[in-house]
Amino acid sequence: MASEAVLELTDDNFEAEVLNSDVPVLVDFWAEWCMPCRMLAPIVDELADEFAGKVKVGKVDTDANRDVTVKYGINAIPTIILFNGGEVSQKFVGMTSKDDMAAALNEAAG
Image (cartoon, rainbow, N blue to C red; front, side):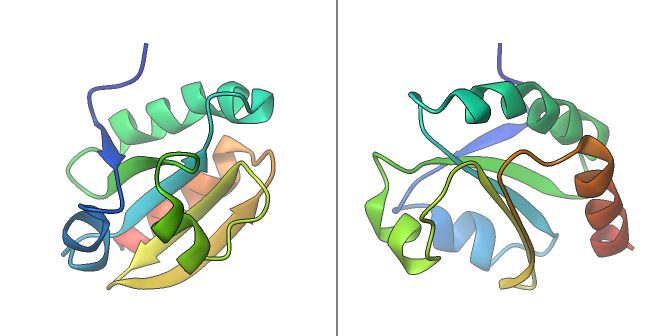
């Protein structure tokens, strides 16, 4: 089951939740049919719980939210992008270790 700390991001709320956020935001671009995405989901949930209050963590279903997916050039999933101050600060494509993402979040959260 997904963590309650993970936001569902859409084309409609992306700007408000991510680009205008006053804290760093880790965004998981995924799709239901993507097996590596499903394998990465528990790690994303753990990070959301561990960094609650310091950063936001959200997921974008790439099949349902084409505008955001195209805008950020997502052509392989899973792709994880860390936004800080509304800008892309780090991008991970494919399976990524929890340690690598946690290090990026620690750096961004200060």
